Image (cartoon, rainbow, N blue to C red; front, side, top):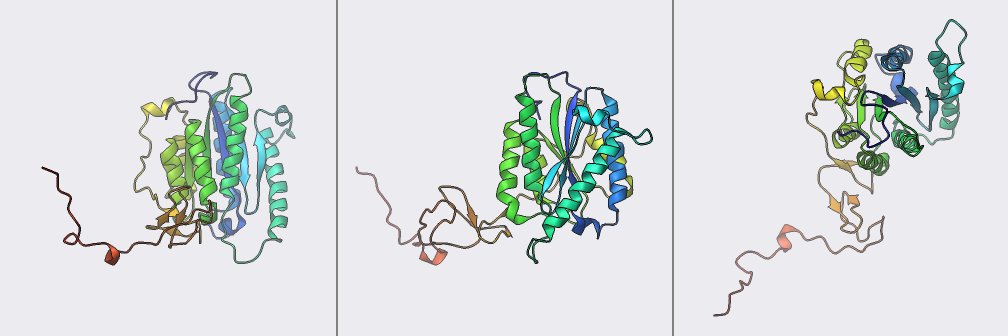
Length: 298
């Protein structure tokens, strides 16, 4: 992945936007508790800021119903927070994170039952890209941006279109998306995001050593990655989700106008309104012996 063009401090200064999964449905069943997870993450964020004094860190909480910024190292207000016993990063992030989780829990009481227990990854990706675009257009020197998704919740098929739009936007902006998946089953969305944007995807086998995975794999800047042997993408799941039932499918029907995907044949595209023809089965196709063969005129 080539670095973002123009206005860079240097090739080893980074802007890391971390998407933090706070879904209570996942953490209640995970072998790693949420408090232990935060301990690893806070140590990793401190390490990023220590590697270079110009490095910047932004943390976006990805909840079940909403997402929001919970920490920004470039904010002047964050530099003065602290009680003398706890670093300002920890104090600010934990306070904002607690307020966010309480608000997200209140929003969850209004949601209907039966919804898939997935996090709002599409929203946090969009917020991360918006922040990076503001940095690009600020007119000042900026570090090399990248996004790190720390996700454990399962993929939400209903977010497929929004997530893919965010992935292609990141690719166009030359912003790599790194992903560290903590759940039992791997994430097809995050695999595709890292593969398409040139980022790194990894699923740690031992969650107790999460900090070591984060620091050795995701702590390196984009320039240094050219000299390291980082995990390569293996067995990326490129299956898509249908627009009608939001299910992951291997084969389906695609609208030739807007490229919407459906798991069964429809008379009309629900996205762009195009009218489809009848699906032609194998039995309806003329056999090779019955086809008229054109001959060239002598």
